[in-house]
Amino acid sequence: MARTPKLNAKQAFDDNIADAHALVALARSLQNKRSRAMRRELRESIGKARRFPAKEWDKLDCAESEELLVIFRPGANITRKDLTESSLRPLLRQALVVGCTSVETYVADRVLELLGPALRMEPCPPRLLDVQMTVGDWLEINKAYKRKGWGLRQVIQEHIRDAASPAPSSIGRLFSMVGQQGIWQRVDKHRKLPKASSERNLEEIYARRNKIAHTGDRIGQGRAIIDAEEVENVLAEIEDIVGALDVILAR
Image (tube, rainbow, N blue to C red):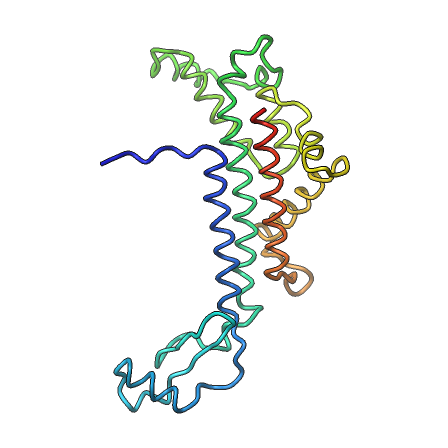
């Protein structure tokens, strides 16, 4: 069986962000626009086609959106009244969280791709020299690795994975570790935006992600409003930022 080639950082990001887009598309597609119960003629047609017992035809119902016609079987635990905009917001909140996770994964993967050249730099980047190693790490390297350099790389890799975050400050620190300084100024320049725009926008997205992850998006006695358009705008911003990062880091 042929081995699947390992994805590079950008390919993995594209794969992950596609999940976020899929959640938004699902939320859009399932939002019911129908207020009335299924017509009798349609219930009978569906009942016959699916060979439901005639006594259960009256229990059939459906929901309609701009893209889907969803049929509810007799005795279903969900109804068309459950497919409202508010009931589908968990999908949108999760899409935003997945978008931020995609950034975090991209940053860790891309920093690791740049680690080898960074270790060969003269002088070595100061933040890379600041990575700490415990006595336990050193004993494990001596025990498990014939080539000690590979053990050292493993310690650094674990540090990078642990430190990775969608927070702009964390992203800046990690890329400086592999010799990439002034990352946000370079991103803004590439995107032709005023200074600090990309950093500020990602910080706002990260704050909303934390609100969703840590408080369930609570505001007062209820939850903050979120809609598909808002999440699509967030995902577009994330993709633009990561796209800019990938271009400037390839130079």
